[in-house]
Length: 363
Image 1 (cartoon, rainbow, N blue to C red):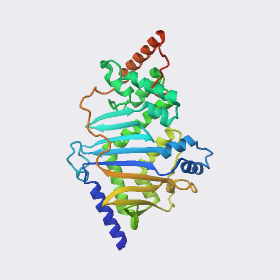
Image 2: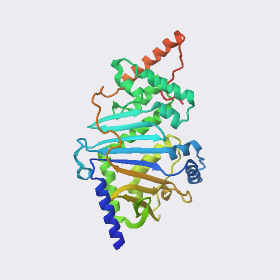
Image 3: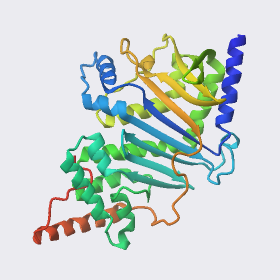
Image 4: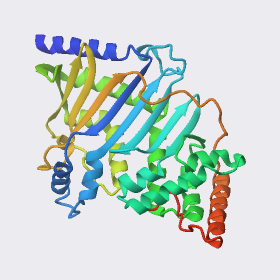
């Protein structure tokens, strides 16, 4: 009991130090190689008969999800911010390279970006020619007329203000007028939709509150020594309580994986499931890492799949709104821009120049 109390006090102080900044960044990655992920997915899906691909394993092994939240005025510490206070937030997703997508909620406005070249190369493994075609499309978009400044930003992969409930409409516009593969367009729309929902302040407070309640009511903490220059603490929780507390994150992970062909990696534990364990790392009195083995929520015999959450004070993602804004992107403006680019390509063909510039996300 004394050790548990000391560990609890150490963790409480470490969290307090982390939240003493005006912003917070969390980076989630899977701490496993492509081969280890493939082996896990193979065992996890054994009963379903669904065999994973090595590409799916590569995506999960390379997944990096970054989230930053902070005070819009850069003045109030995170631990002093309440549910009714404004909060700026941003999220990006990549698979080992450039961001494939990102969402920001800043001062009540939504912004998004989509990296066409990164999607072609990092997600769908497009060859050099496909990546080059996506790059040429972005270059063409950069030269759209000033009246189409918003679509130009979007099509060249920059941040642009968006209508947060129009991602499906943007996707359909890209399919119909940009020649984008429907599966790709809808997958990216899903990433942006889920990202926006996760960044919603009410959803963030619900998640934080549920996690805090679970830790306070059912967690047992035990100091386990030192590793890699950090003090380590194990947290033991009933499996169902832990799953319930982490469900928003686990649901997001499952949905994002399935959109890109990765089989589910976790299942909801039964009422008789054993306790689960997470490891906390504290450096210089600050909580810096949380490691949780997703295999504890996987099918029996699936093995280990460590999820690492790196934490840091400050915003790794820019949480300031752009100084100039073109206003929210509309599907209509996006349509006009795509038709303009298509007409330009037709003119090239007629003059003997290159005519094979495709949509921005053709693998």
